[in-house]
Length: 407
Image 1 (cartoon, one colour):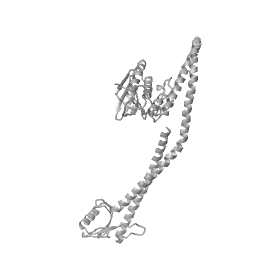
Image 2 (cartoon, rainbow, N blue to C red):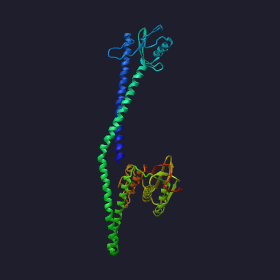
Image 3 (cartoon, rainbow, N blue to C red):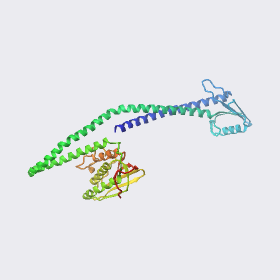
């Protein structure tokens, strides 16, 4: 859990840092591009005004350009520095024609890779041009530099964030370990006195009068409930302690599902339900078959308790791509959507419709802890009077520890 929390802290930090760096570099890029365009426009304007086709103005970077003057008679005169080859009259005519036909007085001629500035006079139209290659190269270099600096910064910040996350989560880990140790110690310490209480109650029952027998029965009933609570807490503790480290064995989830179905079929029948099951054969997963069966037992027990009287309960196990999915569906009161995210919390019960007097709200947390320990996903969907709990586990290849195919 602490490891997961640490990576979550790192991921959150890196996401925020990445967004900040992206915003900063985007601002630098677009501001630089805007300034570059402004600089180009100023030099094109200077070229038109002064006939200076290559020399830079004070405070400006040199941007080579050439100017075409178009007279009313149709004559075109092109002049510029040696950076451009202006000897191809046909190409020059195409460039000038395209610039004259453009709707805007300033813009780009993408087919010629040129930026232009057009100025109309009484007898002539002057058009200044410059190559967009220099603009593209400058901006591409800036973008490349920002990317390299950004990647380097992210690597350094990732290492710093990872180290700091260890410092931040260390107190949380210590507190969690102390809490788990307390729960484990308390549960173990309670088992012995509870056993003594239950044994003493059985002895008292043998010599108790009818009036006293009522009190003895109450003692035994509450003692059993307390013992069940202690056992559930220990089970939850063990499951959470092994989270993220499933056993290195292969088990058949189909077999676990069939075993759970056969076990709960008479239980469901006694409660007035029919348990239907459709289980695909051979669903090999990595993990502990007994623990997975325990998780399925929790879901089936939950369905038997809360399904509407006389309604069927359905258990399915199917192969979905690279995962095995086992689902338990019952018909009964919906779990409110705003409470669905909390149903796997310890001691939490969604509402009165799904509350049982013998339940402590630990069954679903135990099932989730077992599934999490097997790197699976346990989810719940509840709507339209139908509630479905689904366990999704990654399929694996390899020899199964034991098991046969069932249908």
